[in-house]
Image (cartoon, rainbow, N blue to C red; front, side, top):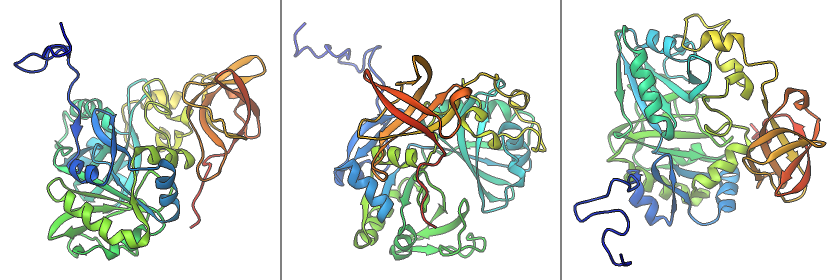
Length: 396
């Protein structure tokens, strides 16, 4: 077999062979982000922008002005019907029925043993209409769990992932950018009393762009003020271009997943597969308040397990700060003397703070703020201390 053999890659003349990797899915904004100079990476089975130039420049732009993110890989599910709220109350670890119309809530969908299937945002757009947003890599797991849990309820579940694109504008001037965007207009019928100026954090409202409806939410994953815009896939490229045009004079730049990761780490926000997973209960990640078995009205899957709590010696999530320039990375050991007492889940040299930071699961005995530990960074011991989260908070 030579290098020019058409089957050398596992493909056949009739199509991909049985061992060929599945093709990556592409965002409705793929052409637009390619034109903007993006380099791409596989993220949850999607071909998504990793960076457009400099990770650092994109990170700093979000902290100082604004960044424009294509996050259309996120999974969206519409839930409606007379018992939509009751269904979500039973399916998720939140009192969904208590969410006011036009508000949003961060929550989780749990396994029976209390492990995290995924962390979610739920938007209530009308009395009997919700949008559930999940992580791309957990699309199938969330779809399966919701599909199983809806039985017996007068409710409908619709997978809206392919129909929607999701654009995030994050940074101190995000509101000014949306206000300056041509043909992005207030929708009096669906704004539910909000305007861009008055929309609270974790709230949403209807707007239109070129006459097409979209949902604008004051949510994000960067630690900055900002908005997430849910728009139909066909309209998304036009909206992307309009936002770039309006935002360029205000410092807006396209930003990729690399900057998004350092931004969320500085803000102490968890990433599924790192700080959250099926083998982790919410309380271990400092998110016990997200699944409150004693205060939630309705029963929900995983309630008994989170009520009992994790084992007494189960590791807990902490923030670690170090000096110098060498950062711990996911999988690196955390040491107390000669003993391994934990493992880093996310780590980086913080662009904003100028020193290494990390999230790590450690033994409860060494989890107190102020505790001194060491990071094993490729055989070198780097002193670190446990610090309160988040590492960075924006000025309000």
